[in-house]
Length: 181
Ligand code: 5GP
Ligand code: MG
Ligand code: MG
Image 1: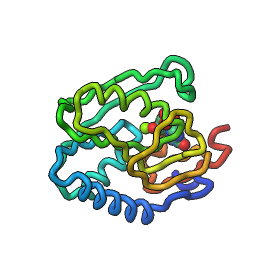
Image 2: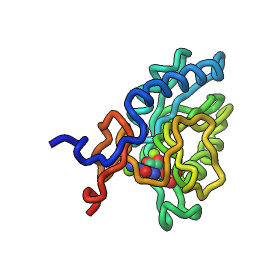
Image 3: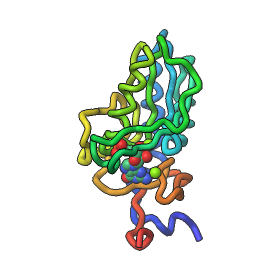
Image 4: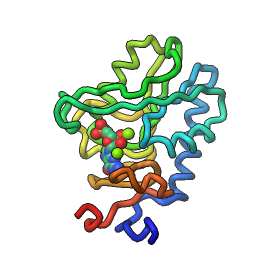
């Protein structure tokens, strides 16, 4: 039984992801040359993108990890809050923070997290997401770097889960409806 059997269609292939990550890594390396870059991965969804992106970045950088959860109402409303479950290890003062995300959906999570990180006196805070679902946006937030725009469908793979599964699919796809049933 293969995970592939649960996928209705592939939205972003392994080859397309690889090419895009190389492009993003090159662009980030140019933009952050001579700066104090720290890549901040929001776990768990961004783990696969982070591992690929950090190796496509050719300038010195730090990496750090954070676990957050949305609460205080549904996480599809902008009134929700973000709770830090696991904080960063490092100090951000004077750092050029690049948040590495799996998908920018409603934008609620990052619209709360960015101001929290800006209070730590970084030099800059920007967002790099491999997927963007602009049709679902509720918060006023845009990625500074993005991989692919996806339609308003629930996607899995390349770090993204359904019920903690499918994160290890090497591509981004849509599940067959019977999987949710
Ligand atoms: P937000 O709505 O705050 O922008 O997104 C919060 C988080 O919800 C994302 O970082 C991601 O982990 C999860 N998420 C949003 N859309 C999808 C989706 O289509 N598939 C999966 N697996 N997770 C999603
Ligand atoms: Mg995420
Ligand atoms: Mg999830």
